[in-house]
Image (cartoon, rainbow, N blue to C red):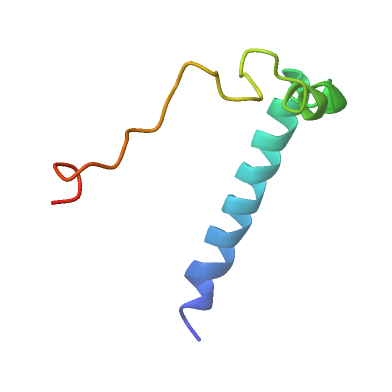
Length: 66
């Protein structure tokens, strides 16, 4: 029962810390553009969708099957 004297204040301090971090992130604009990030990952133009036609699979020969 005496452990509750330690656990309850520690838990309350952790909750206050988490709440302070959440409000800090709100103040710094971490949640301003939620839909932009979700759509940006779907429309990435830097990565090609199809493999290039110049790449070939190596032929299976006796040397490669050993």
